[in-house]
Image (tube, rainbow, N blue to C red; front, side, top):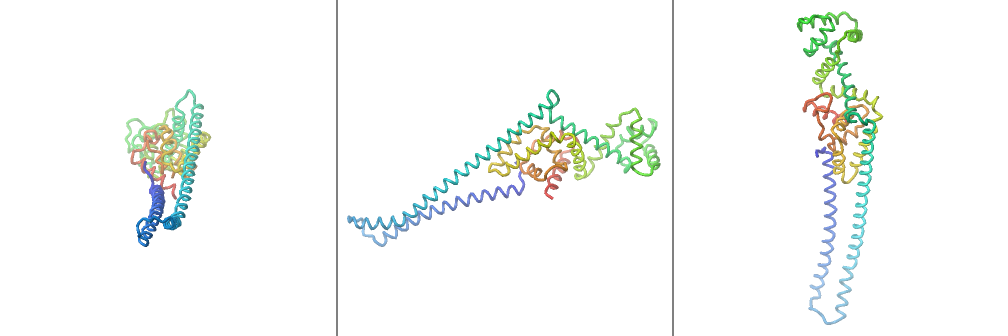
Length: 343
């Protein structure tokens, strides 16, 4: 699993602390053994007269040796008891964290089942939600296309001139691209402001018996693909905000539950293990929905940071993303979302 430097540092510190604790315990026990051995050596060096048959001498030796080792052994026993209590407490904490995690996982499963039950007999529930988001995205593609016609009439894809503007302007089939551009320039110059142009284009679209939507959507997609990553993510944000207005009652609680699961994992001793177990439960369209949610203005930056830390989007199919990004484009957009969440 890929981890951030912050996570690696935190985990690295945890390992060092554990090593230091073990080192301290070993140092204490070795030190105690050394003290006992040293006391025996000192006694033998001072009173080395061989084994005695005198009970008094043995009693004196026992008093000497017991006086030194007795307190040390008592301290060792007490510390051993504290260590045992600490280990028991730690084990209980791990069991408690594990129980909470699986309770959250069961709740997540029930939430998913509820979403599926509401779509009973129809398409995959999360695929349906992704398709609805795609409709919102297509709407913004259309708006991008129309704005580009007004703002950058000479920089449109070739098919836009022939499959939309030619028909909109009432030009014949054999017209050239340059003739379409000239007619478009003359058309645009006849209005006082941009909004009047957009209103007139929408009016013409409504009375011409021709479905221009696919052409405008594809025009917008083409233009968006050439944008910078922050501009593309802004389009995704607008699309999800519109999607959330209609379907937030479904996706909102679902995403919040994921946030609780990842937050609990982040605070647990076995956080990486829990996150992997959770990630294995997610379908391809769930991953796509999580990605779209990350671009929205409703998304908590902490949620995005947890997605990055535990590499939750590992396994996402880029083909499931409605704006059809290339691999490099997807990496740029995802990197921008991650970096922007830390500001």
